Image (tube, rainbow, N blue to C red; front, side):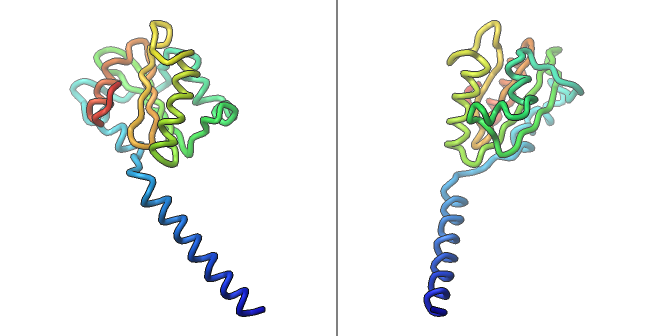
Length: 160
């Protein structure tokens, strides 16, 4: 009996290590919140960090603020954070949602776009820019969020 339990324990450790290594190696590069926000933090001639929430739509605010809403929509991130900026005279809030892997981020982005925009495209009523940087979904919300969104997106090589 002891040999069987030792064998099973060894096998379990081997399988667990393989699963962990596959998850770490196969998940692609993971962006950090600092990586994503760095272009806005360093563009001091164009942008400056500000206090408060300056999101344009209630959908963008509620997705971040309401506990349980993201889980109900199957969009629950691993971590989330927000930071507001004033760029070119326009105030915006950047919401960042971290997911376990880039594919999970892309999947969540589609749901976030539908929830915030009410469809697959931005509109005058919902001007938010929504895109991914690796495993992080970026939502830039404000009355005129284009400058902040462009700085972030172009710095990371993605379309805003």
